Length: 88
Image (cartoon, rainbow, N blue to C red):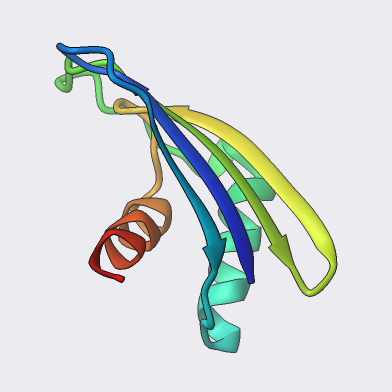
């Protein structure tokens, strides 16, 4: 899977971009496709206020999936992906 994730906002408003390739298993691919294709599955957490914006583009098996989230509605699957990419 190829990814391009841009994170902006926050207190300092210093944008960060992650781009590259990551090998993930079939189930994780399906979970990411599901949350990027269906914004109605995302629950909003109004208690978060640090205002990060996540622009996510994934190329999974030749198909492009894209979505924009903020701290109040980002799915856990995308947060886990960002954490794995940061650890790389």
